[in-house]
Length: 435
Image (tube, helix red, strand yellow):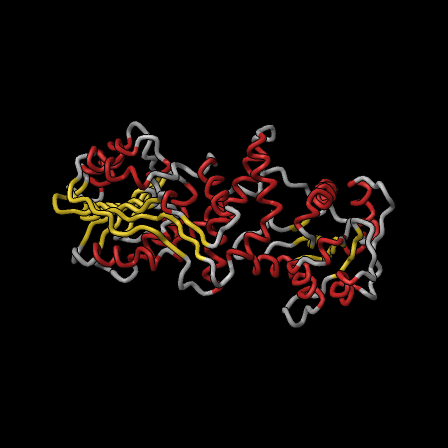
């Protein structure tokens, strides 16, 4: 678990005040944790873990934070460390606007901080001056005699770590969506040769194959060297091989042919492609090549997505429709309407006996933890992506407006998503095809 100097508890409505202070602290080598920027994984667990691993709980006091349920939950965790299995953490109230502590809306928050001295800045302090004020008061706890930490330069919002976690949740959650399809195709062949195209770190295909031990020979590849290194370490054996190959390389077919010859595999019973075609400019070219590696009675399995099938209800103000559009316009998201093109692309590639086996993956029947992972898998990561886009294109007004809207409404979106009467559906699709 990573360690932090300061956990910043605040209302997202105060981001315009708080974020410059956080930036000033980090520029001075203070490692801060703040939501939703640093949330990775389930929201509630990320909050608790961050409080556990921080020295100071900086409570940014304002009218907004006084009535924020999220802030009250956070201070409850910090205030009762033994109950939450949290080490003692210093609660440091910090006034970010003039307030009347005797006003009714401050009753709850004052219960926790009534006997704690509040840091009260002077009017018109700059963010740097406010950061210096916090550091000066907590110099001993922050142990500033040790070398200062470097401030972050890389974006936290678009990284392999975040993507791996998103795929982990996606693989776990979609098992009940795709389980029957895998069971159907794997049960056809008592001993099968499988080609997994774009295997990632191998978690998905190995999870789906774990009930079929010693009945298959798997050849899997991905363009990501680190993912292949992980897959080899965790899964490779005499029947399971992983390779670093990029399907867009000019010599892709020759490389694949060389590998299959070395494995003594002529053609495959099953070719598996999950969430890859949406990222390709020319999926037909890949499908035509793969068809030459499929047995006459073999099966091509494709899992992809089409956002035209997405819906959320209730969504009277169109917030989730806006999130879908943000995802669709994000350059990291691929072709979000790839699914509807697959049937046509398969025909152009020479495939027949094409069937659309399943479409639409929804939150109905999920327990709280599953639903929170579903939120993380989609809504949380799109927030990270739009933040990354905002950093990359700061002059793009549309991206800026989308980012600011998402940032200001993030907590509300989470609460609405977790409501019992809310349904969220994504347009995952499963196609099967033969030669």
